[in-house]
Amino acid sequence: MAVTDLAPGALPGLGAPAAQEFLAATGAVPAAKYGWTDVSRFAALGVPALNYGPGDPNLAHTREEHVDVRRIAEATDVLRRFLGGS
Image (cartoon, rainbow, N blue to C red):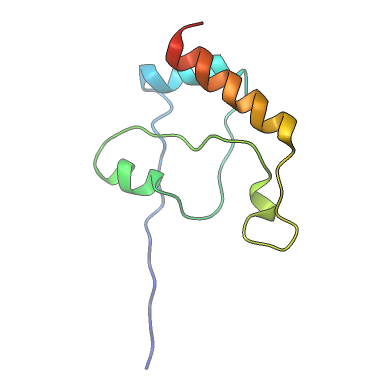
């Protein structure tokens, strides 16, 4: 028996105003995220979405997966500024 697993790629909609505002808040340069995330589901519905968070995606789901507490704090600060306007 053959099992085929397929998930379409997702264009994140970086041109959307909210995405541009968020990118400006992060100060980061957008980069491709390898691996499947829910951004694919949002893209299929025409909703712009981005992956964001601390940590190294290359370590995800491995024994070496970890996130430095300082990077968590930095990401939290970015989200607070973006969402709260402060």
